[in-house]
Length: 264
Image 1 (cartoon, rainbow, N blue to C red):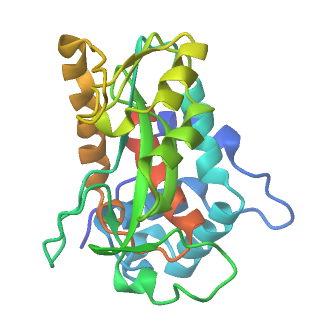
Image 2 (cartoon, rainbow, N blue to C red; image 1 turned 45 degrees about the vertical axis):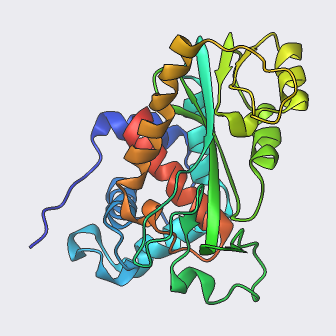
């Protein structure tokens, strides 16, 4: 029998202030249900396969779907990340390639499982699943701080360019002295936007730039922290492979993993 793993009381104290108020009938034990959601996402299970010790699988699934639609998990991540304090450096990156059974190595993609892609053309909620050379994929754009903790997350379809993610994340970035990014983010508009924020751009120049701009090579080595962050997120199987059809449930699963790994 699978051992039941519960969030600690200290961890619940960090996230429970952001839970929706219960109206009418009191909710089933929040600690047990949220722990069940975490267990499913971490292990990549079907909802029906959650151990009985966490309660009925329909209760756990319905809580995840309902709170995802309300944006509860995303709000918890945003508030905890906002309280992360000052940081000297920020790093921006898009999710590195995921190896799946067809051995696709296209950069920046979260492989969409067939259960996520089966209703690509139907439904009321956006999917953010795009068709690329590597198949049906999504991209996770992220900004992390000098401690390797995610500060901002943004999900797009796989064919969306990195600049689109950078533009969306720019408004949510906390203040910092420098932003580290690979040469894929070498664009004049981004450098100008960072200069307006009084943030130095530590970005290698593209080979086709007429005048190569210098960057701090020693400082640039710290960019491995965001790669490590993605690696920790991908240890959770429902993050490594996208099983969720709708974007709001997919980003909720990512937010839950980020909360547990980095913020509580």
